[in-house]
Image (cartoon, rainbow, N blue to C red; front, side, top):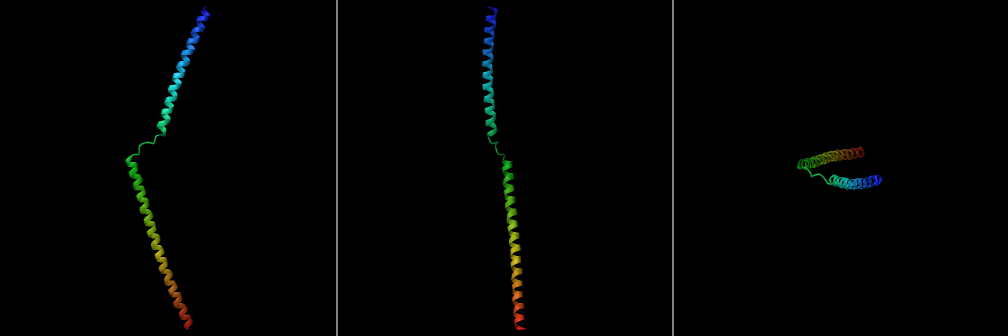
Length: 99
C-alpha cells in the first residue's frame, strides 16, 4: 500500500503542479498581452515636440518662400538681359540693312 500512497501523492502533486503551471501560464499570457497593448499605444505628444515641429514647418516655409523669391529675381534679371540682347540684335540688323 505504500506504493499506492506514493502514486496517489505523486498524482496529487502533479495535479497541483499542473494547476499552478496553468495559473502561471495564464498570468504570463495576461501580462504579455498587457505589455503588447501598452507598446501599441501611442505615447502622449509632448507640447515642446509640437512646438519644435511647428517651428520646423515654419522655417521650411520661410526657406521655400526665400528660394522662390530668389528664383523669381533670377528669372526677371534673365528676362531683362535677353530683352536687351534682342533689342541690340534688332538694332544691329537694322544698321546692317542700311549699310
